[in-house]
Image 1 (tube, rainbow, N blue to C red):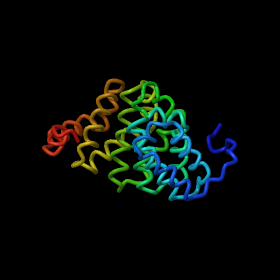
Image 2 (tube, one colour):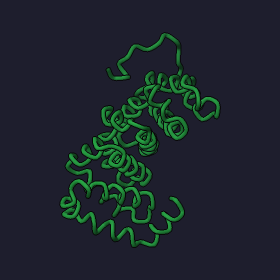
Image 3 (cartoon, rainbow, N blue to C red):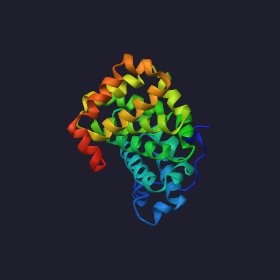
Image 4 (tube, rainbow, N blue to C red):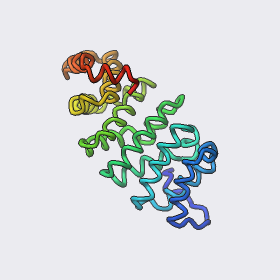
Length: 227
């Protein structure tokens, strides 16, 4: 059942309270407590069409997932993130935060399948297509795709079956040649793809793109610096 069709509790949650719940995630003690995440998800459910609430929610989940990704999953944050992306397809900051949160979730053991089932891959691919000028969206989108294809076979297969996903990664790598994270994640994804269908990667000039990026001084410095 969709998380947004569940029965809400009877307690009153005003918009100000909802925003306070999002801010609570940033407090050191709260980020370790499941109740803080449950409160944030419920607040997001109460205001599904409020841009400010959803933007703050995506930020809270990005922050929280970096420290306690398992609590985001347990609280239902995954479905809520995908819903926010679907409702506000061109809110760049919101999408960047949501993509970052999804990438963090995929790094949990066995969580990649949950992200796929919730529609996370489709949401991220759509976000990258609709926000090509948003470098942070493109960066986190490439990171999510890279993690999916390297963490589980189902993720790799899902990306491979998408008719334009590989081309989208290459296009992003070409559009942002000075972004070390995009280059690194893109190269890692191409390496994984090549293990399955080297001919397709070659036909798309994927090997050539990886070779050119690997020889780029900016990329070399970024990798050496860890970003």
